[in-house]
Length: 317
Length: 317
Image (cartoon, rainbow over all chains, first blue to last red):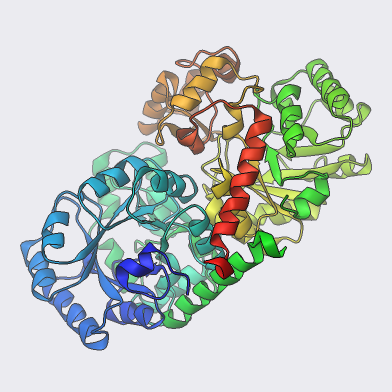
């Protein structure tokens, strides 16, 4: 057990948070992570209010003592029905992302929730703190899915955010094992948020073909597309290759939006069309080689982190 | 003193290597780093054979016992006169970069040199090992100057390279203090190569205006330009802004080359035109706030690394 301000804040055993990814992170994944001693997040971004309510209720029934929460992408604003579910069901932990932390932090705090916001620069981390969050997640360029425009990597982002804010910093982007977790703690993070590695777990609700695509991905198998519109890191499949080509020749926004089309992330991540779907994933996909249970994975990462820190101990070498 | 395979290989006190940057890394910087217990590299990339010979001779005179070497960018091939200087002057340590490790590794090894090659993917790290290098430097997307096309960050690159090769791995890209160094060691690196942080030192031969631009840079003050031709990370100044605009609208190679022009890195880094020059620098520039002596800087980073590892020691918390 490695105690940090993050384990205290969320009442968890290990400072490991599972990213609340769309199409992948339902109540089963969140609960499995909680069973391993981490914090599991339900990804509300791909759920209707009714489905979100169902997932929250199932997580509550399985883990009334906690260890789980909800990730809520903002992107402009959140539907009133979705906000109502979170408040009515008494969700205790919420991670917001992809919009202004000013918009909902106060409301959630007033409802007694513990609130973190995901951001991508040290300056924005300060804005999160000013908005009243309990913790800030800083996510680097290597992360999967939607991504900051400034392309700061985890390595430069984490220590600068740690120096910039007083609230605990959670490192995200490119962390997939206990060595990466130990690295994040060395840079001053009080915990890690891990997404990509949890896509390929038994309890992930991603399509099996998506999980297999992650396991099969090479170290150079992802790319950040749609940089001009809304940057997103994906597996380089047939669809992504078309998008990369169009971007390289300076295609205009209309053409890019046409290539993007509608519901393409659902098509890839949930329906399993690994050629034409949008498979949101981080650079860490290249290092993923198995599909363990998420409970075991949390324990494996925590143990490897402990072993790494012990190996580096200056007094024992 | 933190002993690793890198301290043994190069006979140095701390596993800290100063990147051999063009226009910045002359004999004064390399020797100052060696005095601090690290490995200093003379940057041959911006030197004529005669100037390189002068720098090597001065380093040899100041530090006959070693602690220094030469960084040699390959980019296709190296002029025979430059190779002759390295062999005739008996340079003992060489770091090659920007080309195939197959081209010169055998020749340098046969001349009794210790050879490392700088690369940007785990697969290419294996190719370096196959070519017979003594160590491999893996450099992430956050690094300054020329950069890999696959955009892998230090965080995902280091542990995957460590798993892929048997030779020692040196982590580069985004490391600027002892926390980042500890993080690299946690990921399995046997040492770090630090560039950007050493630009802003007393012994750096970069123009004072360039050093000041590094100290003044914000965390989001750099960008990777020329991605289609030869990716290079620079400070976002007036020239870089023109380049970014042209790239965003899909300008063709001819236009990009015209905007690049000739000798633009010399103009910025050596002559100090911080508006129109090409100021090669890593994302870590945002965290650089002072211009210490390089000798003190090596000691400061090594000490902070020790303190970080001690703080993380699982048996003492």
